[in-house]
Length: 338
Image (cartoon, rainbow, N blue to C red; front, side, top):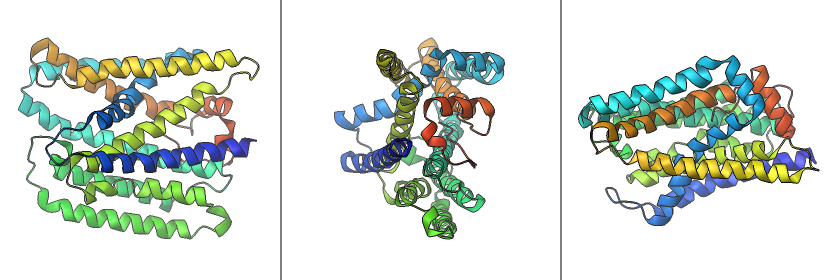
């Protein structure tokens, strides 16, 4: 029974990831054009919706108790990030703010790749095979760093009106990405055949090849949109598993209410974030709301990096209580970071 649940989660994660890239590529407008309504709605759910869904964790008593014991990460740091970015958005001219978005996006895409690493590790754990080796993990991170570097030297893919004058380095980033992918595949193939079941193969390839569209497409929505949709879909699926787990099967109404709460938080909170994300052209206090939006997203990075660090006792116990089938391997070396 647990093995079936693990396979269902793993194949759903792989399918959502592959579907996200296919959808973004198929619906991507030409460079400089706006996305259609369909792609816009998918991006809203996967981007703003998944960030807002983090707030669901604070509705769980044991998470609130854990946050109270670690106020710096879960309360103080998020509040300071929101206040600081709101103040910066009010004080800085748009041109200066655009430059600050480069490190912001760098952090965001590192956050994406850490989640990919964690999901690949959970794929191994839920399959009951040995955890990822150092070489396998390093290749995933190296591929991510190469993709991030490519976006920083070619910020037009992020639709940023800044020019770091480093575009000549874009091909070098592509070479570094290819080396990381090949080294990761080579490391993975050193596993014994029984230790690399098909689902884990697919999960590992999704992780190590995640930034491939950055090097393959000129349209920002084809190059980056798939990354955003895949990341958000992976996260929302895992949050759904957690929200619907850990409740007595006899009390199905509690399961329905927990999932309904997650959906409403994601949609309502995501809607507010989506509105704020489009206020970058405003001025004064209204523009401060755009800065606050950036702060909320960064707070999501900080919160998830702690809440999903399964090397720590509380996150491991929390996930095990709600989705024990994801922790079948006794050696879990890396974890999702949202």
